[in-house]
Length: 544
Image (cartoon, rainbow, N blue to C red; front, side, top):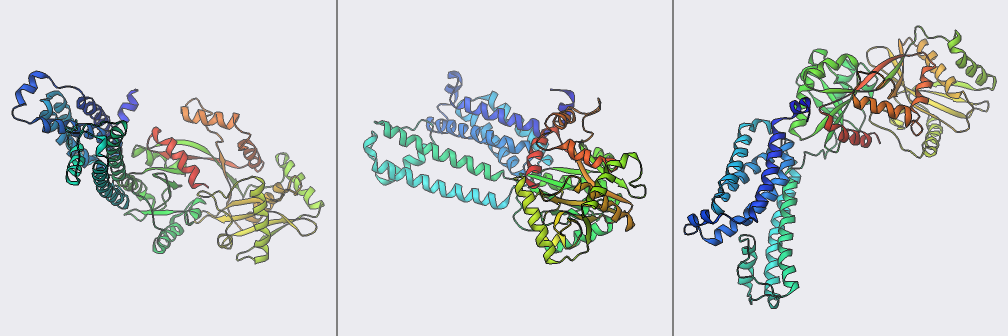
């Protein structure tokens, strides 16, 4: 393990490994004979039945510690408390069952470590899941008792003892307190199977209950309207990227810092994915990120910030976070944009061709006519069907009439007035920037139609006095091209260059390059390299 990884290991990680190790020690110790010399010292003080029961307890404690180790790794408060209790009982149990000082010392050492680092364990568990686990545990214990009692009473011909109901109930209880099942001798294979099934039911129930106690906090309720209104007010005052508009969509939850910042995120798979940077007063950025870290830690979530700006990296570094470049955003300076010059020849050719064919570009102000939205809906449906895909969300808009009725729509018609392509435009709140969101077209459109549409989009934005036009993120562009880039970024560059067919990264980048944009890097901010697979799965889930 490298020195960097060792430094990234937190106390709860070391304690988690030690807890799992103690679980294995317990399981081995439970089936290993005690030293004869030590047994002779305690056999007259501690009855054999107690020592046998302690062996079973040690085995169950070992099983529980193996399950609890993952909760200790994640800093779970519930796991910490249960582990503390089990280690205390384990320390005592090792002494009772055979004066096993070595195992008791290891158990006590881990217990002391957990106590010394108790402030590190702040992650909450999900209350409804906890209560469900407790209910299942209670019901299962009653069921197991009834199952064993009725089984022993009705199936006593499979054992060497004839049970009445009371004796059958006592035998069932005894199986969970005495390791060797004294007095129970199965005379048939079915009898042995039935006795083992009681342990199987009990062990499965215990495992489920422990896992329920360790479940992360889940989001079950929609975001209240009051929170959405509060977020909208902050975004209107402080939003400085086009992503700020998408932070107000229905798929987002909100975290509000004490300094007046809002962090918009989507939740999936124990992961909070933040869209863009925190939105709020610049002076509150560092404090907002720190508070959000603590919020996620309490909920037992990991987190990531997606598509952050380069000028906020220093703040993330201050709190120990890391970044990966995920692409570059294409920004066109509208004051300098013109179709003149040799580099714009291909665009001029497309525009002239479409105009000769009788194609026209139109702009529609919100709210839009239902007939227009109906036509665009058909194009959108056809476009998605041909790609065998679904609407992308999270960092993009989707075809929703309420949303489209808040944005400009530009569309292209052929000589017969039929719409063949369209796009909607999103306005940035502070910096006079306009951005393209949806871009959809029919399969009948001639080559060059999208060039024609985008040229008119840029000219329209220019006439309206906007300073820049945002063509959107060019995924993986400029990633992993430098020797200083990380191994992960170089792997992403391999995907960009070699696995390009399915996603057409290069084609999209080349299309945007036609408009001579300025390329601005965008980043994914994450806590630790080990979290990246979970973050990637969550990002894929929330994106549709």
